[in-house]
Image (cartoon, rainbow, N blue to C red; front, side):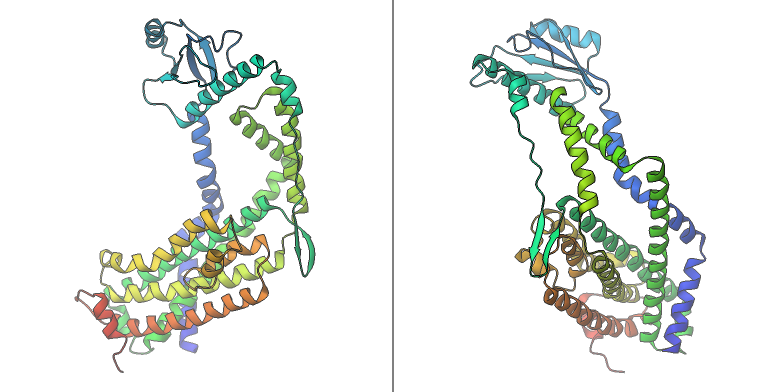
Length: 443
C-alpha cells in the first residue's frame, strides 16, 4: 500500500505542477461558459438586420406589413413576381416573400427567394409573420378583433410540489433539469479527460521502457492503482478550483447585475425571438421573469444529498472507467492502436449522455431511467441526472452505489490481469482474443 501511495503522490505532484494544469484550472470555467454562450451569440449576430421584400399579390398585407424587430424588417415591393425579382436582385435584399392569390381556408403557394440559402431563424420569422397575418384575416372575417383575443388569453403558473412519504416539498422542473444536466456533463467530461490521461501516461512509460525499471520494485497492480488514484486526486483538485472560480465569478457578476435583471433580460430576448405581439409581450415578460426568479428561490433541492452523491459517482465513475483506460494503455504500443478498444469503453458514456437528454430528464423515474441508473457502465451519469428531480427511493440509490462498487472491483481485477501482461508486451498486434488469453495467464 505504501508503494501505491508513493506512486499516487508522484503522479499527483507531477501533474499539478505542470503549466497546462494551472492554465486549464484558470481558463476552465471560462471555456465551459463559452461552449454554451458562443453558439447562441453567433446565431444571434448572424441573423441581425435582415430585410425581407414582400411581393403581396394576394393582398395578405394590404393594411400593414409585419412590425419590424431588431433582427428583421419588411419592405413592400411590386406584387408582380417578375418585377419583384428584379427589385430583389437590384436592392440586395436578404429574402423575397411572394404571397399568391389566397384562399384563407387553405392558404398555400407562398414562396421565399434568397441568394445563399435561408437560415433557420429567418425562415421561422417569415413563417410566423405569414401565419399571424392569415390568422388576423380569419379573425377579421369572423368578426373578431385580434387585440381582444390576445387580452382574453390566460397565463397560468403551476406550482409544482413533490408529494411523498417524507411529506410535501416544493419543486421546480426547470431548476432540476439544469442541475441534472450540469452534474451529468461534469462527470461525463472528467471521466473522458482524466481517463485518457491515464491511458496516455501508461503508454508513455511503456514506450520509453521506464516501466521495466519501475516494475522491478513494485507489482503491476500497485503501479496501475497508484497511477489511477494519483490522477483521481488531480481531477478532484481541478474540480474544486473550477467550483471556487465559478463561485467567485458568479458573485462578482451578481454583485453588479441583479439576478432579477438578468432573468428579465433573458425573458425579453426569448419573447423577441418568438415574435410575440407588443401588448402580450409586456405582460408575459413580467410574469415569466417573476416566475423564473420565484422558481430559483423556492426550488427545494436536497443539496447535501446531491453534493454527496455527486462526489461518490464522480469518484466511482472515474475509478470504474480509469482502470479500463489504464488496461487499454498497457495493451497497445501507439495511440493509433487504441481506437479498436476505445469504442466499447466510451460508447456507454456517450449513449448515456444522449439518452439522458431524450429520456432520463423527461421521465426520470421510468423503466429506462431505473435500469440505466443500476448498470455500473451508465449509473454514474444516469443516477446523477435522476436525483435532482426527486422521487428516487433510498433502496434504489443504495443498490446503484453497491453495484457500482462491485463493478469497480470487477473492472480493477479485469484491468490488473491485462495490465500485468500488456505492460511488458512489445511489438505485437493485440486482438480481443489475445486479451482474453491474458486474463487467464498464471503468475
